[in-house]
Length: 299
Figure (cartoon, rainbow, N blue to C red):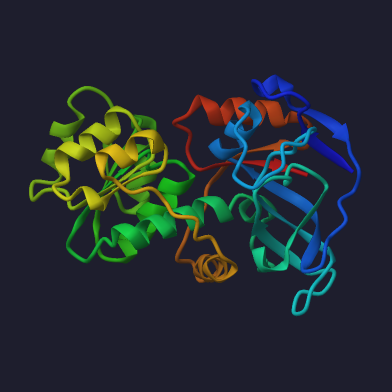
């Protein structure tokens, strides 16, 4: 099979197209012929040398932990030929991927491949985060990095729960966020004052997708630190007493979010699709930050 992989960790240029052995599914696994794979900061960290817990340190290493494709080897209730989307730890930047059967769900026929390939990580992360923050009707949620993949879903889920959403982003993403139902404010000096002006009754909870100064603003504005969750500043979370997302991804959660998308209750924006051979370019775009929606590889 072809895969975008690396022999030595480093910058985006270490990713190259390789011919690697086809994976053989173990008991309880399915074999997916991948059609699309999402690209996210997690993958960039893997490429740079970070290794998720429990993953053997073998090389070459294939990034990618969300995907969509067609089952070549199925499982009970998911026969060969079923179109699916799912999640894992590594390996999705490849033509073939073996994953546990309980990490895939059926893809609706009307869901485009690029949307499906980049769906699981952002949708599940946002859903898990908001389950912890529990924004209630009439409350105000502050979302930093709101135009990204996780932020896009978090804004929609919080609005559906009846919360007001203050969304920080670059000015060029403000119209997009208004269309999702949020009140956008610009990054930069004076951010706390701009948020106060947009939320005169205060901020009840915050989802931090930017880190650094954005997290500092959350600490300043949210009285209860247990209602602040950071997606990126994990090194500071424990000392500050703020939340991180627990590892609670599941097929049941994913299926519920797919059903919500199918009913029109969740919009996903794919800003760019790259061919597998251009995985390095996709990583450069993701690492540049501040982009709208999702970057996806077409396999």
